[in-house]
Image (cartoon, rainbow, N blue to C red; front, side, top):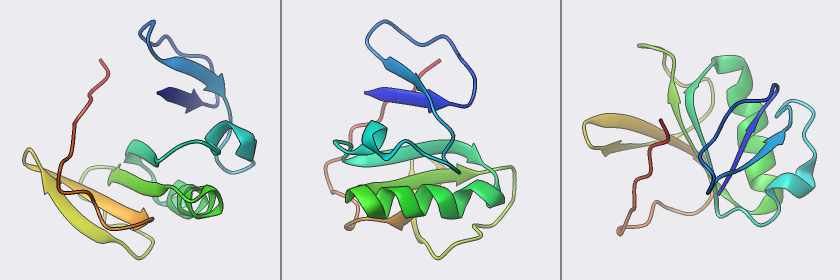
Length: 102
């Protein structure tokens, strides 16, 4: 698992961290990803996430800020009472493992 952000953040030892900006991405960071996931993704970053995911053949999943609706075309999934939007990639798998980083 790899986490990215535009500034350095602490992650658990099992998570690799890379500084990257999804609006000007280093595509190689995402090449082997099966899915990209973003929590509380603002509307202006939804298209860049979707584009990068499509470029590398990954699914793109995200939650929005508060009650915001997605700014891109999505499929909606509910997981543990949370609405998750999918904007790229194949249909969501039926056997889903959920990871939450704290």
